[in-house]
Length: 144
Image (cartoon, rainbow, N blue to C red; front, top):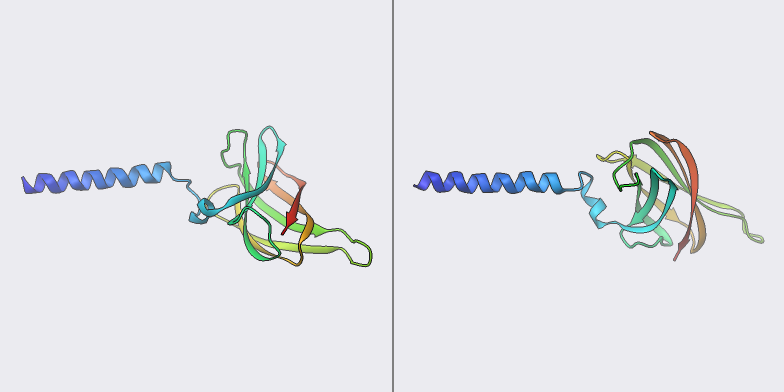
């Protein structure tokens, strides 16, 4: 009787673990903590989302996530991506570029990185990508 109870308990525990694995995002745990800053639908089969922990681009150093998904919200196989934040020249202030160092995650089409935004204001996220789809696009963002 005691062994039957242990077997049932282990079976339940194993079921919970399998279910949690199947229902999880499959990506890095940090993705769950990220909030959308902005996104852009590039085509019917590609949406690019820029996110961080606050859902707002901030003046200063911060971690970012760049995610490529299809029309159903599933990851798109993008093997390489680059992200640069650009603020055009204004008056006597010269143009500014803040590159983000991106690295791949365990989920296809998902990249993590960090950037140091040097001042608040209107920036353009310049994104280039290669993989199932290849291209370049921009997303206007405001740093606070």
